[in-house]
Image (cartoon, rainbow, N blue to C red):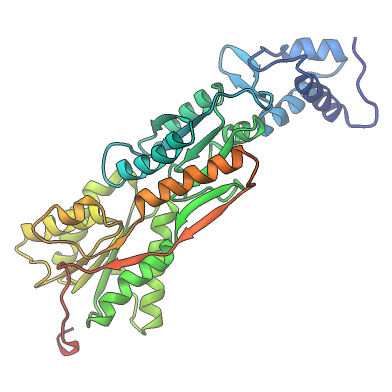
Length: 365
């Protein structure tokens, strides 16, 4: 039987003993841990006490459990890496993501780093699988676009494991509130405000909004929309507001417009979460012979390639895609080199005016 420190509660003493074994590499990265019964017998402890110690070690990222296989050491000593940075975004091949990834790759490649690329499709379970896999690989850092960042961070334990293993983390486009890390984001509240204020300035008062609410960007853009209305003494009309999430955006767009028409409450302008939603709205309005911008003005967000893809060129908020990718890569390299701890930057949004909006006289609103 092995003796533990008598100065701590039994579960804490066991926890510290195991941590010391891991730090000194008596237990190495990937090693299978002794079972609860084995630890209980070796240290003359109850299984409840052992379970309590192991649970805290799992939560802090020192060890991890695999269903049906056991518990394993997840700590990797500093320096055990190979000039590789992982990039985990929600999507890869469409919308604004190719330019973001191009910016990241440009900087990483110029500094001699390899890039591992994966995507989550904005799915928490897929995010978990990728982080689990990456935590076992020899990487120096990871650039992550959080999955559904407004929802509970169910992968906090896995992310803590990365940090414990000296894997640097930079969040891109958003971040998790419970993770104190570096980030590269836009001022999305300001962006929502600017988009809405532009419509107010050209005479609109009946301004609707469609916003994605399972990520922080969407919530911030929505709050900016509300702030602009309130600051200009425009009453918030709940019928004008559509809140959707990742899984229902396709059906919500058509239903949203259909309900506005059915209630005879069509707005004169709509602020959209992004350019993709803006084009969906324009297409749906067209099905009802409602013209943009003659009947309804529409503002997008991101200044993506979609904003120029249709006959109606979108007024939108510029997203500095490639530059944000470059900056995220610079940050992760500086953190790996020990030059920065938790750097951050917030990009100011810019309005890009095209032809999806029209100025109206106040007496027609």
